[in-house]
Length: 354
View 1 (cartoon, one colour):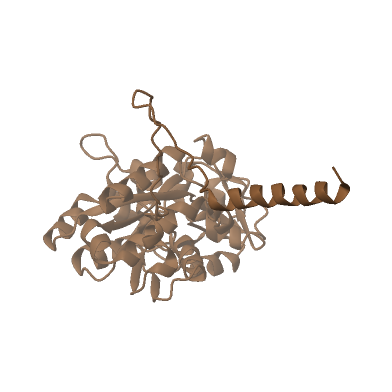
View 2 (view 1 turned 180 degrees about the vertical axis):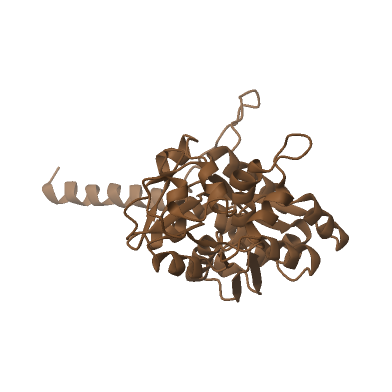
């Protein structure tokens, strides 16, 4: 066969194959499902929205409205610090912190019903609870710290370093009127007395811990009323609910003595000297181990209805309890026992339903 014929046949065959390919439909691929085979379901996960923080509603920048706090001059520096921080974190409402004494604070909270939070350097009395009940309030206690009541003299005083509780009681009731009566080694100079007024929780505490035990009632127990009368009846003594007035008074005389919350001593330690009581100086260690005899709890009080009606008050107390331990030492006080602070937070949680 000639080369030309072979080429022609090749072309014819190739064209035949091409036409066959174009004209024949491609076979469909069939998928056979075995009905007895186990089917693996395809699970489509639902889209889950991020969980909102239930505490976001109590953030400082999430609340508004006014907050009124009043009471203890001792708790005042701590509450003032917490109020400032609350505002720095975004709270735009007005917050008032009045230093009027624990007793006056409870009167404003329980009798007048004018404040949202009562600051106190002692626990609330039964009579004050009754006054609260009369206007439909049930005080809720929140422990926020510990104070070591500081007995102080001027930094210029070079003879007093330590006193017993009995000596203090006799000084502040006029049984000792000159320093040499306290100790023969002391100068025969008149003792100048400065102390908190009767509306102060610091006054109440000092009376109960130091003075009243010198006046026993028929049952052999400390007579609180007799102690109060003895202190307030001391001629020449100067009383004030303003601790800064007391600080300035003691600073101004080498022969003066006074007492107030530890924070005020810390703030003025350059001009004052803390006196050891029963041989123990007020400091973190002696407060923590319970050896300093004039340590006392610090509180704030509010009411369930107030927290429900005023979210800003609930938010402030939550902020207070959450941040107090980061600030209390700088203010001049000592942290509350962890269990007591947790009890306070639990009380807040119960009241707010959180």
